[in-house]
Length: 321
Image: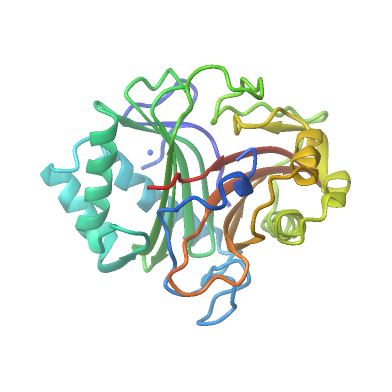
């Protein structure tokens, strides 16, 4: 169990300590993603549970170690992926045969360094500004902004990286990124793609591992009911009517989701195939229903769950390319 709070790499934001650093997903379901698993993660085979983890989701100690290892990759390697420090850290923390999913992605430590180099090429002077993190079972996820100005959340790219670790080293990874839209969106939604806006009506305590798992199954079920079954009644049961939306395509609230699903913009059903829960945030990674080996993962979605309702949402939906 870890906490999901902003972190600036290589800088540290005020009051943040670093130990060690679509309206809907379906809105762009036809877009090409930057991740394609070698086998469908929805099947509980090869030791995977129903959310794609091959580790113990109740093992907080291992989860903390895994998160620290992943964040060290960002602090040591992202600022200058060509440096000797970056190479040494990547060699230590990424297995030589680590699988990298997605068209053009390269395996092993060099593949991750190449990805960081490409990020910095697209956004000159870029820093990785970590916004949310999760460690659950053998999975670690990082939601971050690639930006030259860490104080401006409306520039650069939004990104999510997903890692699987074994014995303290990355053995598998997926990457998602999309440009941050500029200007005022047609939806009128001026929330940034990263801000944390939800304020609970009463102070809460950090969720236990048991509660995190309950949140995961709750949010994944709600996601699949909406996006796979396309049953909008779930919006009245599992979502806060004042749902806070960080995808600029849509305004806040469930009314926008209801309008989308009742409109003419049909899209193929999709479902969560990998999921994590950490703190009050559940992460889902989705594929088209019936996806085969090599088919892309379409999007990364983050849902804040509090008092048995989904309260807030962020996502990264790779564009075609």
